[in-house]
Image (cartoon, rainbow, N blue to C red; front, side, top):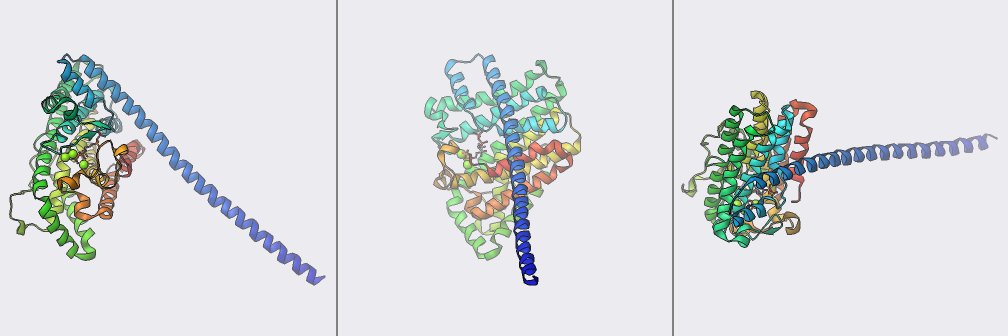
Length: 398
Ligand code: IPE
Ligand code: IPE
Ligand code: MG
Ligand code: MG
Ligand code: MG
C-alpha cells in the first residue's frame, strides 16, 4: 500500500514537473511572441509612416517641377534625377523635426523639397567623371551618362537654384510661413550646402583621395601598432570630433578642425587621420542631414534648446549615415544599393572601414545612433519616429 502511494507520488511529481515545464516554455513562447509582434508592429507602423511621408514629398516635388518653364532637355535631365526615387531621408527629417516641435506639416513641405533638390544636385555632381566617376545612381545610369557632362552639370546648377526659389516662394503658398522664417531657412540651407558644409566636404574628400593610397596604409599601420586599442583609438578620435562638431555652431562657421592635406605626413598620427575623416564626413554628408533637422525646427519656430538638441542629433546621425554608406560600399549589393559598390576602394577614398575595419566602423555607427537617440529622449514619445529613423540609418541595406 505504502509502495503504491510512493509510486503514485513520484508519478504525480513527474507529471507536475512536465506541466510546469510546458507552462513555463509556453510563457517564454508567449513573451517572445509578444516581443516579436511588438517589434514587427513598431517596424511596420514606422515603415507605413515613412511611406506616407515619402509619398507626400514625391507629390510635392512633381508639383514643383510642373511649375517650371525650362528648355526641354534641361527639364528632362532634372526630372530624370529628382524623380528617380531615393530614400528621401533629408526631406523626411525636415518633416519629422517640424512635427516633433509642433509645427504644421504644410509649412515644412517647401523646405523639405528644397533640401532634396540640393541633395540630388550634390549626387549628380558627385558622380561626374571629374569627381567619383560613377555610372549608376538610384538604380539607373548616372545623369552624365544619359545627358552628357555639360547638361549634368547644368541640371545640378538648376536644382540648386530651384531649391532656394522653392523656399522663397513658399511665402505665397498654402502654409503660414513668415518672411523671417524664409530668411532663416535660406541661411540654414545655404550654410549646410556651401563651403563650410557639403561643398567644402566634397573638396576635402577629393583632396584626401589623392593621398589616401599612401596615407591610409600609414594610418592603418599606426592603428594596428596600437594592437587591441585600435578600435578605442579610433572611437576616441571620433568622439573628439563629434564633441567639437557642435562648437562649429549653428551658423556653420569654418571649423578649426578642417584638415590640411598639404601638411607634412610625419606630424599626423593615426588618431588625427580619424578626426580628419570624421570632419570630411561631417561636412560632405552630415551638414545637409543636420541642416534638415534645423530646417524642420526653424519652420516650427522651436525654442533654442529643441533646436540645439535636434542639431546635435543631426550631427550624430549624419556621421553614422556616411559610415553606413562607406560600409555598404564594401558589403552592399548593387541591386539594392542602386549604385555600384567597391568604388571607394577603386578610387582610394579615405573611409571608415578602410581606416578602422568593418566591425569597429559598425560599432562606431551604433554608438553614434545611441548618442543621437539620447539627445532627443527629452521629447518623449513625440521623437519616436526620429529614433526609428536613426536606427534605420545604420541597419539599412540600401
Ligand atoms: C547618398 O545619399 C550620398 C551620401 C551622402 C552618402 P543617399 O543614400 O541618401 O541617396 P539617395 O537619396 O537615397 O539616393
Ligand atoms: C557623397 O559621398 C556625398 C555627397 C555630398 C553627395 P559618396 O561619394 O560616398 O556618396 P556615394 O557613395 O557616391 O553615394
Ligand atoms: Mg563622393
Ligand atoms: Mg560618390
Ligand atoms: Mg559612398
